[in-house]
Image 1 (tube, rainbow, N blue to C red):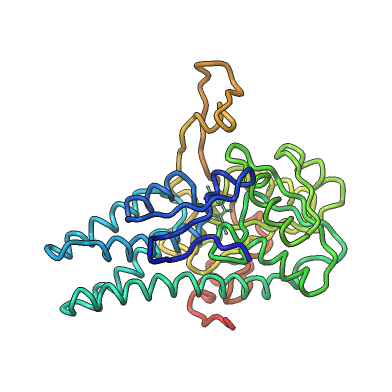
Image 2 (cartoon, rainbow, N blue to C red):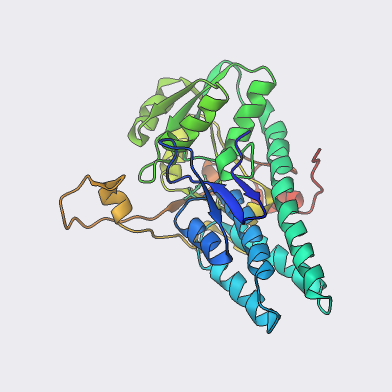
Length: 347
Ligand code: MRU
């Protein structure tokens, strides 16, 4: 299995997702500021993986904190990490989880707090792999046999601690003996589909065809696609889903062509404090990601470019939301709340 992120004596080691598939390079973040920079610069990306990185960043930051004003330093570490990317709620979920451990250790010797934070960060990573496998088990029965699955962006092992959410569902369907192949949207502008999803599925020998984003409608209409499975960065209480820019267009085209549209995500991606998707903060990234590809201009100098990194798919386009706790269907206000309070079956 691809190792997205791990804790080592030297620091937090991540596979550099800005360099894949050209080179398989690993970077070591030796302090929390470097972890924050890796999240911002998308060396590590994908909502659950961002959460694991943030948890490890908090642990690493506190490991190196000076003995004076521990509370102040802990707050600064959390704030720095929280400012990296605004949309994926797993970032804030992971920081809050680390803060709960810190608060519960109040009055204990710093060495014991350091140990507890490292142990918690390692648990976040381990649990994430088990959660993805549970998502896979819950989602595999929904994938039609002998058909093509369309996916957008990368919601795979690289976007999690391992196995993946949307790609976890595909992996589990294949492991269950289903004959499926994958169509991967290239996912402009950062090309997570072509660079990461195709690379990742190649490792597992799952037959994959790369298409440009504007080919999705053609294939959804053709009858070839049995279902769409995507990940999520934040899911509001009414089932609206923020995910990689372009997801909304795919969802509308799927509904128009009566193709089931599934969202696969851990419960940590649910943000039931937000009534609907309009309240989800959408990250705006640098225009240069649109005007340039791998540093090469693809637009005339001075071209204005917009770069919202995510869009919101209204719940009415979503056939089901697959979590580790089970599968939610409309009305999502009820089904998501139920799943949130239910224990997962994680092996
Ligand atoms: O900008 P990214 O690459 O972090 O965006 C990733 C996505 O939109 C994924 O689909 C989402 O985080 C789910 S990952 C399991």
